[in-house]
Image (cartoon, rainbow, N blue to C red):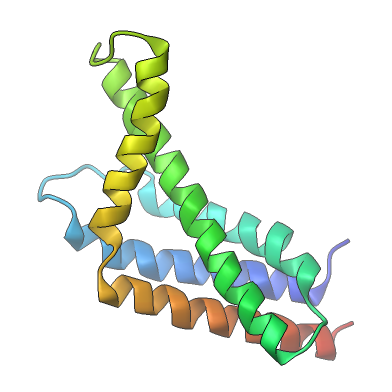
Length: 146
């Protein structure tokens, strides 16, 4: 059911995804074609906020912070999986893999490589602070618009 808390959580995580996407772009090698990178991450932020965080509001301040941090982590995990899958698909179209299982394993290795690229303090701090704020704002929206 649509609520103000779900909408607030979705918009907050979408904004967080936009900011973090902008922080990640300078970390990758120069000349990288990002395509729909930011757009996909914003949609993931919207979905994670609406589905994951929006249904867990209404339990108080500390759980709100925990749900915000968990929502940011879930958003990052889905983004790593989807971006890793897209990169694997791009490489598979160039016949870089010998079989389907090697291609599926490549999703994991590519996602882990992407994680180590983005695991810098500025990005991690932005995710932590943004997740906390998203959880607190969603909790506040739940109290204002039940």
